[in-house]
Length: 411
Image (cartoon, rainbow, N blue to C red; front, side):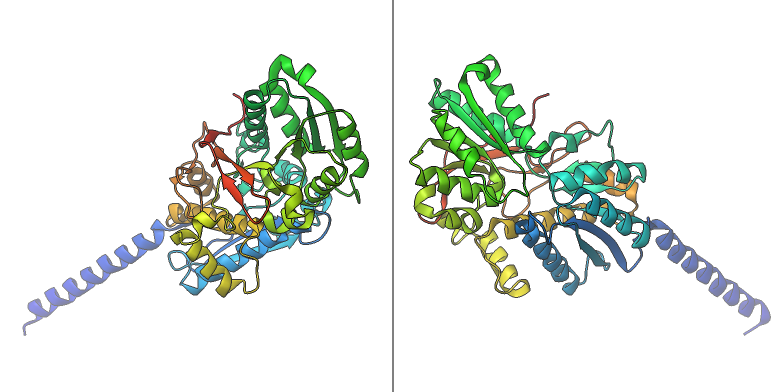
């Protein structure tokens, strides 16, 4: 081989090496990361009431953690393991702020995902928006979770409380146009949203149709006196916008005191396992609520592929967990929703792109009712905007009726 030939081969090899390095460098450059993200990991966190007056919801956090363990066992998302940090805030706004600061400033998470509760989410929202930290799918049905003008880094997940309340008011107007309505609600933004939705839908009729309103504090031991006042009003419709502990109490008290109005119950408490059974299933017969997902206790879904997959997941990753507890299912749905957003981000795992992808969704999540989609945009940031009515059979399950209805808040 002559010198010129050897020289050409060396140059060719060097050129190939340079091209290869350029390609490798280009691939690496194609991945963009914010704090908490890398080639191997995606770190994110949440607040969850593992203790305190709303600890009944803590199973949502447990199921989220179990789901992300399952994802990691299957190799993560695009080869990146999910480092999910779920912290107890005791359903306290001040504790929620403390935990949010820890997640952002100490743990340096990429984003906050599925933090629970109206008080907590309202408390941490200004801080997280000031820091430009995405809060994706906050577990909070306030319409304020879609106020992108003031808080562009925060969106909710579930149908709004206000939208659900409007559906109930429409149902009452159709079925009992001369009804006398009593309302039980939590004394915070959650409860006030229900009252607002009812009054908005009733319009001028609200002044005559609503005969009693009673609120309660979530730290109260009982609500006997509130239910007694509502009963004495002579109401024949009871809109029960209470959370699970107080829903079970109020259902039982109303029945035991001989008050049997048409009762419409917030979807946040439409759980057979944690509300109807403690209240007494026979005492809850006929209660109407709403839903956007397949209730595992409903026999019509017994052989549904979505339910079989969900049951298999719980059996393996949360052995002993109650399949019929809808709060486990909500955790599962939230985990799937967050998984979809991360997948849409591809290799651009910046906070800006996470928020952009969360506002550009059009997907179906397994275990949502047929026809219910997760759809978001900058103009319509509420991911789930439809509900269907359901009636408790007094034995073991809710039975769906009617059609899917719009549960978006008023424009």
